[in-house]
Amino acid sequence: MYPRQFEYVAPSTLEEALAAVGEGSKVMAGGMSLIPLMKTRLFSPPVVVDIGRIPGLDAISDEGDYISLPALVRHATTASDPLIATHASALATAASLTGDVQVRNRGTSCGSLAHSDVAADQPAAVIALGGTMIARSTAGKREIRASEFCVDALTSALEPDEILVEIRFPKTGPGEASAYDKLGRRGGHSDYAVAGAAAWVKKSNGTVEDARVGLTGVGTRPSLALGVGQALIGTDGSDEAVKAAAERALDDVTVLEDLYGSVEYKTHLAKVFVARALRQALASV
Amino acid sequence: MSREKATKIAAHLLEASAEDIVFADGAVHVAGSEEKSVDWSAIAKTAYQAHTLPEDVESGLEAQAVFSPGRAPWPFGTHLAMVEVDPDTGDVKLLEYKRVWAAMQEARA
Picture 1 (cartoon, chains in turn green, yellow):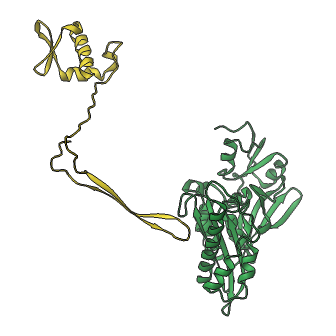
Picture 2 (cartoon, chains in turn orange, red; picture 1 turned 60 degrees about the vertical axis):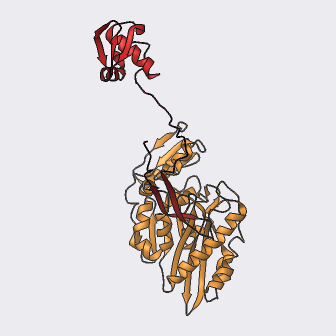
Picture 3 (cartoon, chains in turn blue, yellow; picture 1 turned 120 degrees about the horizontal axis):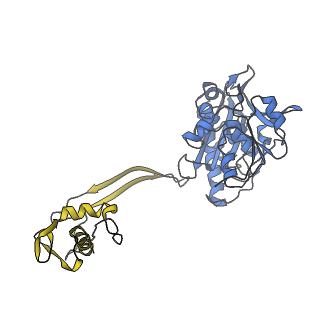
């Protein structure tokens, strides 16, 4: 398996990188998703812009109003960082269940989002956490809501001349918590998700004030399960309320069959994991 | 098979014709001249030194046989698995896996 011939550009600053990307080019950070696609020739970009050598993009930081996760933060860092554990625990879990050790040491969280694989772990978590994607181009900066970022199979909302430079998360306030769970393709938590869900909840005085759920593994893209949140808000977050809300998991998704599950099985699994993620988040509020 | 091959190797070592090779008393000699002999260890050693073999002899000296007892034997062992199935997802988790070996009284394997 060899890729088609391509031009390789390795800029040393973000400005140079932004100047190099455009129609026909593809941005590479860790290369854990892009390289296999190129080697199997499912995708053959004429130009690869490797942003991996740009300094200063690999540290998670507390920016006062939000938590910043820049472009070169590896899955392993996301999984173990104390700020992510505190403010985006669903993402910490999702990152810890991404790929294997080698992939987690090399692949990046922003790369996983930009790749927009329907079965990836982290997009669902970022959606549930209400993350904001920061896209840069030579023309300036653009903010994209996580729920609108993954638009189709392996297609993000990024324009060809844009680079996803950062993901921002709101900080965890009182009564807020999140969780992620999935069934992997080889059982347990292994591999890509057959189906999975991330949940974020906000509870005060015994009532669910707000809730968001991100789905993975079903349909063509990771997506927001709007109906679940709507059904849960205003309830006491009891097991019955969670179960009823989880029934609405697929309101806005057309579930697709794949090698790992039928429509019926995936529909069932999505509801199971929405309920599990919600229960776990509610239990840790 | 291995006797035929050993004959070729012995003939080669003794610089004799294969028809004249005689197997006797754990060694090999040339018919009519018992002083021209090699033992099995020399044949075996030569068999695995490809560069010393004649061109039409491949290296190696092996034989395989299947033993079929007259009566059905007791099994030597068994494998046991204990798994947990998640009824909500169908996920199977392997909790324990054991091999149990039992020596068979009359086994000569």
